[in-house]
Image (cartoon, rainbow, N blue to C red; front, side, top):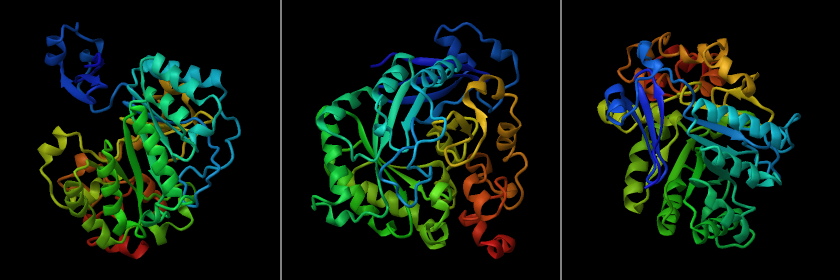
Length: 389
């Protein structure tokens, strides 16, 4: 069992283990029972606002030779002002000092940065668990062996690929599958990421079957979002209302059949809530909607941060300790639940769902504080939203 790490919060603290993976919020009595002395944070009222992010999604480069047409980062060329190694290390020092537990390293394509593994090693040396998201096309036996440094490696599967022709040597999925094999042979923990669109919705079963056969840790399904180049054909690629309603029961059934855990990102929580799950169980298993600017933060390779990777922001990561409690931008993102209009205001799941995906609301409705227009509770009941979407 790995060493337990902890961080004080106003309600008590957050505990983290890497093996087995665990992240738990506990009260003050539990922290005292561990032998911790009372924290100065306990002199303040309990609040849901954390003292720092739990996880940061950090793009180490915007370079990517793949240049997928739907890329939410608009990757291809490196960002102007991309961080040098010394700047990256300084940013990691800052995040470690704030008590961040996990950093998800990605791009662009992270493996296209020549010093990437040196940067990843620095994250690990600072006591933060590094994870990697990669397209898998650059994985070799040598690079896969180096990937043992990560808590988990997630290989992204492109929605446009034909999984059914994975046996062809020139097929992109076949190359990614080979990369998965290299990782498994090296002893790395491996999962898959898949962006779900209406075009690949009916092929989810094939991907879960592949993951189950390989014995992968899990498959995380990500909602297609209007960010970066994803804005260009968003309305043609987003799930239909019927698919949004069918998504959770279908995923649950196929996941059980294939015996592989299926995860969803926070933007799918409105679709999950529409099936009226038990709120107590959701809270116990930390199933929650958008936690941008609280649990999560996204950082571009030039050092600009946003509430998450799908939102835009212009403030610098090097000012984060000062801005965490003083940024108007972050404060506005955090007020969404308190200021939620109808139909979210009357929804029993508001405190969990938090109004759905801000990136979708901003693009479709023109207001990132508006209810998610694709939430099944919203799209069938609000005539104003139907008129605008």
